[in-house]
Length: 150
Picture 1 (cartoon, rainbow, N blue to C red):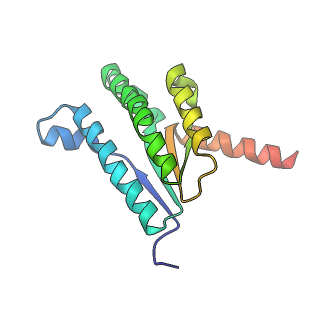
Picture 2 (tube, rainbow, N blue to C red; picture 1 turned 180 degrees about the horizontal axis):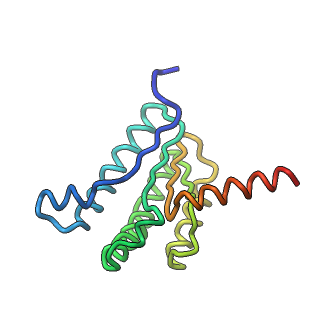
């Protein structure tokens, strides 16, 4: 044991407040959050952490102004297009949890491709919780239990 935890989870919160405190648009805070995530993923991978879960976009986030939600969804698309190849080269397996049905077809496709491209990697498991919430967690647990009972 190297003294590092096996699994780290981060609630990605405060990007908008960070930007506002610097008199910047909220979107700038979300973009800076992506940069911070990149540094965290690299550090976890280098330090031997086995899994990193990022709580990136809860189901409650849909209540934000539509322009902000649209910009966040665009940032998801841009980030997946830009980062998946590098994650794959560095042995990071990408998985998404949460309800994908509300996402655009383009984003759902990129999520599926990211998971497919990185499925054999084992250096770090990067789990991105997107469009998740308490009800979603409970329904997933019940489905899992029902499947096991069968």
